[in-house]
Length: 208
Image 1 (cartoon, rainbow, N blue to C red):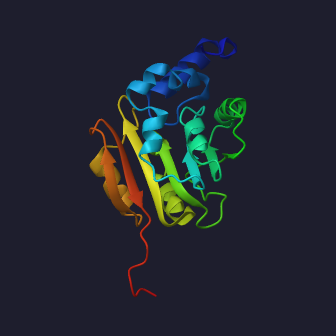
Image 2: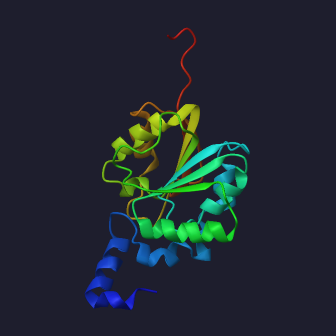
Image 3: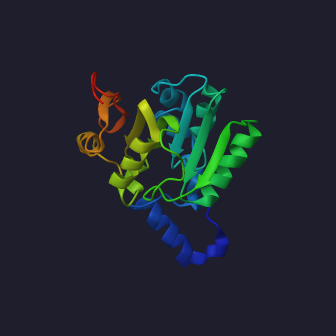
């Protein structure tokens, strides 16, 4: 439920943000934890679409309250999962959820994904964004940073679905991501509820 201490004006502002463009407000995180969300995509389905090994290092951008995060952490017991979100309140909720599940291979970073990300080059094998890329003010800058952070052959996975007001149509997404140097790999699901994966390509044979 909404925080009554915000008052009616504050509540209206939170609802407006939830229904309009921009990042989803942490005050309504219970909506993205709704069990009905499984009708669109389950954590297991998302993880199955990713090239994860037990030792993979994964970056989840915009995890919200951690709806998918526990499953991702479970799949990489010898690797790591780093959660990055612009809202510290969302990260705190995700941290409580993951700590209750005794996942110890998870890091938490509060940061704006439009800016340079605070990780060294080639830090991750997989980067995941679920219904978040359209919320980022400078998506192209974010994608360029993810290209920098992924290891050669690393995979970027983006999931988009209705009724997200920031949903990016598949062809638009593909054009945007490929312009940053990624190579398209595969798409799962219908155009209104899809996961698309892209690879940071290995150098061509003979390239210096």
